[in-house]
Length: 398
Image: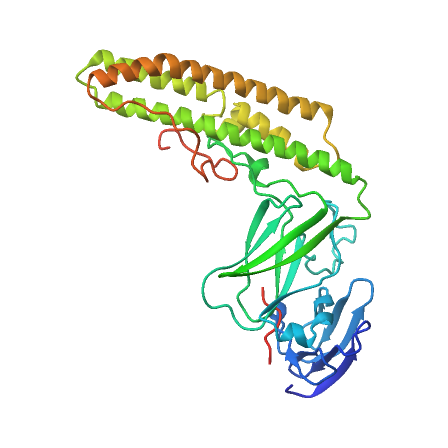
């Protein structure tokens, strides 16, 4: 330690865990003062620390500084488990306070202009681990698996030595949405996972460490676990439907673009050129049943299957209770309409496209093929608008 010591306080749970406020910042000892490390989380400055209080309900450390206000260090539970075996390990997960999915609410300003507030704690699950030395080579990542062993998210790890925290949003990936003339705003976010037990796997080169992550319901939440599961299943059904739309849209666009390109190369054959342009037009007409294609459609009211699904998807994920019967039926109706559109495209493939390919083959030109599905990553996370004419480390060891 350096600087004059203003205050020393033991933890209320582990008396060997000491906190010292000095003239030049906050210091922590996990072994009753034998070793000390300076607190560096959240850009905490090297300022005088005059008082310290551990909050028993939240396990937060409240720090009173001279000139820089009050700081709150969220959840000191990991520090209570810094035994010698952990400190000597290459890497180890550290326990945290119980993780709950807090209810999502939108508040106001009841206190008027007399508001004194700091940033809220992270909305996601905080994963905490200790790393003996800085990670230097290769990727460091955290993989999150559900109870069935299915990978649902991948997060970048913090490479610095010491204690690191990585926040998982507790959301699955957003749906793949076909591009169109306007953004599908609701589908920019995937649904929040159902509370339960998940597995976190930290991967460093050829080594890996795993830890269970239990997520609970907010005790203030008016919805049951069954409600949440019904909501999640409905949201994933809509998400999968977005994926089917993306694949179908990609196939239609592939045929349209290929037909237009072949038509450019068939200028010496007006009949074939017209046949190909008609094919491109028919494909585009089918696509317009799936997505809005007019710029400013959000204002003009051009809505297609993609836009209708985005509306009901948003209604489902923004309310964590069980979806209404109407919402479930609406998703089913859109799915049937998409099946009808896929049927029209299948008729086009077997009819006009097949005839065009016969004509192209007779002319020695390459035939038009239909991709099986869209490549991974196609469509963006929320169907970016497309113009049709263009097509954290907490501590450093001392």
